[in-house]
Image (cartoon, rainbow, N blue to C red; front, side, top):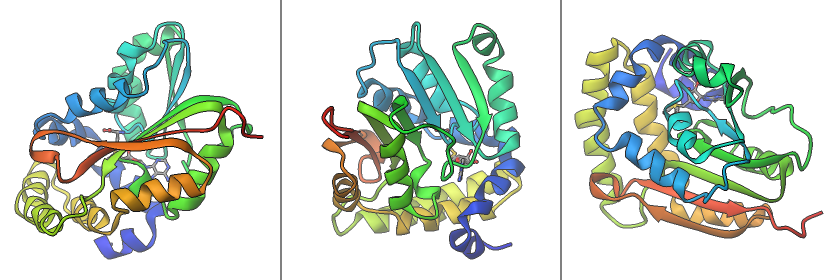
Length: 243
Ligand SMILES: C[S@@+](CC[C@H](N)C(=O)[O-])C[C@H]1O[C@@H](n2cnc3c(N)ncnc32)[C@H](O)[C@@H]1O
């Protein structure tokens, strides 16, 4: 199976994550600032601590770990469609799951079994880019959020300047692809990563899509350091007066 096939049929992306689940934390651990950036994005939600938070495409739970310090009496539900990534998350957060603070569920993020207006907060880190249809996904997230509910999309979205695309290609093909292939023994998912980022929505297009689908207070922040041209946190709210 090639990276092109993954781009064309994103429903099978979680199966590729199954293959690298045991090495995922190692690979992302070498990416300096990975956890810090997730925490920074989680802080933008300004949680009170009692919310129900969906950590969509939670993987092995690195995004869950970033959310945990902000949750007291609330709950984080990690959702992913890769059995092996979820297995790693469940092992990592066994104590928190026993105390009811976390749970991990196997679902396709495109087909979430939640009622309309039922979720306080959705955090989606490195997830939206993997969806086969960004707009349908965003529309569904809007539907299940409560009025006043918040969405935070943390993902690679290339800045709208001449060199961000070139910078990403050098970074992706020159560093991420060779090093991650060496660490995990798998190359397809990393080749897919580089290509899917190159094709993903740039910031103004993603903001426009959020607004078109009813979200308000939409804005984004760029993460700092070497990831500034590529990594963004998009914040959006479902209006209180939405019906
Ligand atoms: C790059 S990982 C991100 C994991 C985690 N959020 C983090 O920040 O490290 C992307 C995750 O999205 C999951 N994923 C991809 N497509 C999905 C889908 N349609 N439904 C649910 N999960 C999906 C993959 O299985 C993978 O675990």
